[in-house]
Image (cartoon, rainbow, N blue to C red; front, side, top):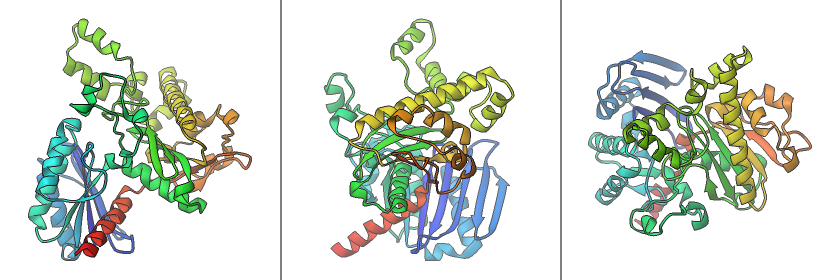
Length: 396
């Protein structure tokens, strides 16, 4: 049994997955350190939802480990703990057994992911204290992008900023993109080494990736998850000169960061919400700002998709995943509409009737397959963890 831990900036997701890839237990503590903190927990067919008072990530992990003990004695069966780590910089390009050097490496990347890596470090230390006699493995989100070519990951800025400060494009949501790429190859019964696609992770955070013959060659996010297309509350790409203009206008760097990270995207454009379901409801009832927000969102994603299409030698499939990608019939239509000239055709009936499940939604005449595939990052992490353990056993 593998315990998967995913520490976010204010959350903790956990899953317990057995050797047959069956999830026995899963849950999430969200809004850690706030009055809105809640636990959602699933054990077998039993589900629970509780309001909690949780001070920090260590406290959250303590509650999770106690739940595992109380509910099923599963803690006795845990053979390994695997940690999702958002940023490994250029130090880590594959899953790694955690030791002191790895912890120092993750610490050195804190400045690249100041909201996420500290939470991961606290979680690793807490889990090692609780389970000191079993292996702990780090799986890095950025590792999926480690083979991008320089023409894709370099910024057009002085080279020493890359060589000395490692300022470059990294990419995020790697575990999600990798899972749906591999799953789509399975569903289409093609060799991953000969399969190329564009994966679209559309949630509150949004990123697209171009994958050619099993290797990610480009993506929309960059040095931070702020780059790319507009998101729930993040601006995505803007003219860098806008920041200088706002500073000269008397707005502080800290205020600008809040504006771009927390008050922009769908929320900023609509003035009401970052929730696509609410914006669709408002737009259908005549709210012009909500409609404009959705139009901008879909247009920028479509433009990004077109750019990634040209980066690939050929495109076999386009994959939608994430909460919006899996569930919004309306936005999938807006995004694909107009791509007919590229041989990409959506089947309107399939798109309308096959939400939230693994389904092909492309038209029979489409030259490119279009699929909905729900992501399963925890399952991918569990499989990668077993590979590391098997390799380590072979060396022993």
